[in-house]
Length: 177
Ligand SMILES: [Zn+2]
Ligand SMILES: [Zn+2]
Image (tube, rainbow, N blue to C red; front, side):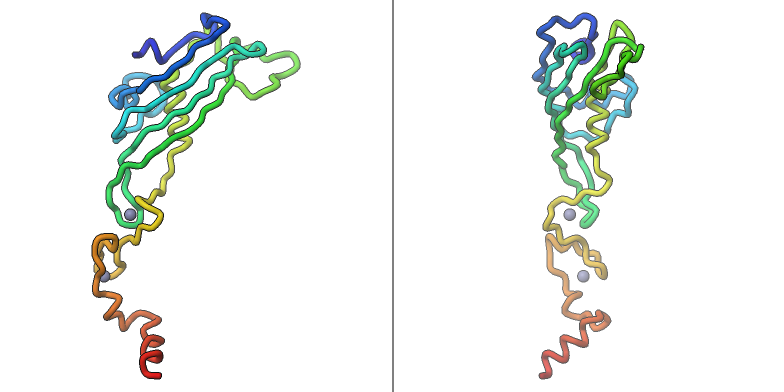
C-alpha cells in the first residue's frame, strides 16, 4: 500500500491517477512512515477517494476523505467516536524554479521527479480539520458543577437543594406570591 500512496508527478500519464481506497489505521498512524505527525486513536480507516491530473502545466489533486477518531467530550468527558471529513484540493508544480510571471494559482513546488507522499498530505488535511474542543452531541448537558453527575444519564438532586444558587431567592418569591 505504501506504493499506492506515493507517486511521481513526472511519471503521471495525461489521464493522471485515481484512488478509491481505505487506508488502514495501522498505516495512517504509522510514525515510521512519512514526516507529518501520525494521529493516534483513529477507530476507523481513512476513506480516500480522489484523483490527480495534469492541468495547464500544473498537477491538480483533489478528493474527499473521512474517518473516525476517539475523542473526549469537553462537557461530559465521555469518550466518543468523532466523525471527521474533508475535501482536499491542491496544485503541484514540478520543479523548484519559480515561473517568470509567477504562479497563477497557489501550488506546492516539488523537485523532479516530483515525489508526492499522499499519506502525509492527507495527514496534513487531517490536522487542519482537527478541533481542540469537541462535544459528544450539541445537546450534551455536561456534568453537574456540584456533584459531578453526568446529566445526560441521570438528573441529580442538586438543582432542588440549591439554596446557594443565585436564583434560589427568586424561586422562593415566586412560590410565596
Ligand atoms: Zn458530552
Ligand atoms: Zn448535581
